Each structure stands twice: as structure tokens, then as C-alpha cells.
Image (cartoon, rainbow, N blue to C red; front, top):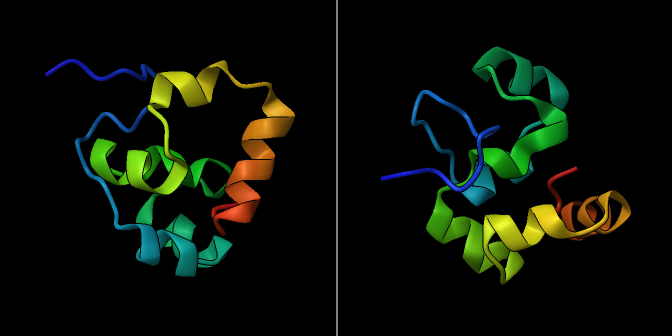
Length: 76
């Protein structure tokens, strides 16, 4: 399977949406998660459920819109 995002975590690990939402920056650091890119750690299915779009569609959005969506879903 080919990832749609070359910047996605390369170790194949994904974390659940609720777990990512609950992580503060200290917990992110401890788990090796970039707190500014929590959405990259969602599985493809969960990413689609949370954002109602594919990763490619999300990446095509302007940066301000991506940030706004991440904030509205508690992933910023």
C-alpha cells in the first residue's frame, strides 16, 4: 500500500483520534509525536472520518484552513 502523504509517519504507527486529542505537548514528545502535526498520526480511515476528506484533499487546502480544521477537531 502506498501512502498518500510522503510526510506521514514512516514507522506505520497510527494513534486513535481520542488519544491524539487528549495528548498535551509533553505526552506528544514522550510518544514521538510532532504536536503540530497530530493529524498525520491518524489512520487513513480515521483521518477521513474526522476531516471528511482524504489526506490529499486536506494537503491541497491553504495552511490557514488546515490549521482551522485541526483546531476545530482538537488536534492543534
